[in-house]
Image (cartoon, rainbow, N blue to C red; front, side, top):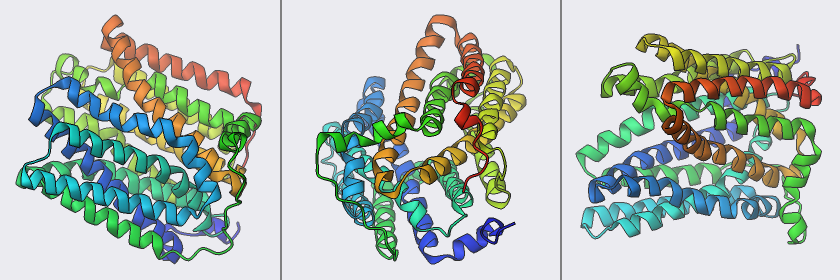
Amino acid sequence: MSASSSVEPRALLGHRPFLLYFSARALSEFARQMGAVAVGWQVYATTGSAFDLGMVGLVQFLPTAALIFVAGHVADRFDRQRIVQICEIVAGLTAALLAWGTFAAWLSVREMFAAVAVFGIATAFDSPASAALLPGVVRDGTLQKATAVSTGAFQVAMISGPALGGLVYALAPALPYTLMAGLWWLAASLIGAIKLVGKTPVKDPPALAALFAGVGFVRRSPAIFGTISLDLFTVLLGGATALLPIFARDILHTGPSGLGLLRGAPAAGALLMAVMLARHPIRRRVGMRMLQAVVIFGIATAVFAISRSIWLSILALAIVGAADTVSMVIRIALVQLATPDEMRGRVGAVNFLFVNASYQLGEFESGVAAALLGAVPAALLGAIATIGVALLWMRLFPSLRRVERLE
């Protein structure tokens, strides 16, 4: 066993560049999760319109989708560290404006939508640049563990961020935005303190071909294309979480507290798996393990679909979150290791677009299928389709199936 493969999570966090990166990303995600609750609650409290509430996600997604390829190219031509820093500062300024407008009572829904659009733009540029930074802040051979540790921080933010956002909004509506601004500005200062060596992006000429070079690279790399497309179809077909309110009220016959437990179960399972992978990374047959994790994801989703016990449903959703984490950690590490540094921004943009679109479209697909077939058949058919996709991908992408190690 090499020295790098035996690195403990505590030693990872003892490596100053990764500690700064990890802390900044955790603070940023925490702020983002607080904002999701605060903005959604304030929009609905202001208008009472479910349509306006739905528009929050669309207004944030559209600029992200429109700019993601430009953002990936920017991440490969300019200083990624400064790009992330600027995005954090802009997001913090936008949150500060929301706090001021809420406190002074001049903030309208139109201004909230404008702020959400700015968040979407910042996310579009932040995501590929920050993803491309990760290999440069870890020691050789520790990327899988570093990815697992970062995923654990993300899941902690997913669990606690919305809860804290709702609590402080109840105390004072302007308070969550004030905290978000402080968290983003602190994250920007931490990113700026990272010392990178030999990570100067290659400044390709700003041609249209260079802009979409990430798409071509992914298409020419069967293992990467198989990994990213597998994640797309898994979430698109197997995302039953959008139907949780229906299952909670009409099938499991529980109230808001039960719905809260159901919503927290995938994140709890994901967090436990992230901790496990941080201590015991997958060392052999990682491609096959990822495909097997997707099959387990589908089986657990099917169990959730047919369950009539809330505790069995919670267990199934926790397994869904754990299996998804195995797939996500391997996907992120595999894509980063298989991509040259000068292409990581553009490839990261393609990856982000696939993953982000899959969540958005997956919720839409689940809602339409549930409206046509009912919630239980829709979730069950989605689970079966997910298993089928994983088995099909084993045949279509043998190079992915044969990936042995993440090195």
